[in-house]
Image 1 (tube, rainbow, N blue to C red):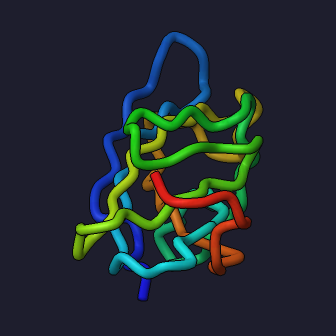
Image 2: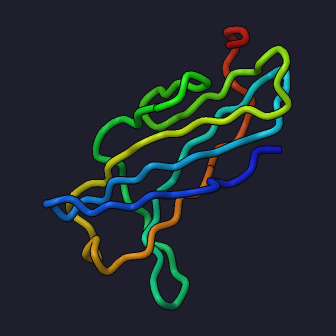
Length: 119
């Protein structure tokens, strides 16, 4: 089963957008994994406000690939775990200033990777 994002690095640039670097890992399986990282601002009351990605996600590791907002982790022949690191930037128009926000990345639409072989 895929695990939720294990670490998120948050940096607030000159604009009010949020730059997120997130790392995910999952048990290796023949069909691989696909998921959509969902960005949310977390309020003091625990509520979550969805935030759109400004640009397509960028995969920083060789073990994955991105197609707009969907990330794919392919199966590996001998590994027990597959990992992927992605980077994304939120839209600049945030309901809460980036400097005053907590951020959460949740994996949605979890499923098998599209067919296409192992990495």
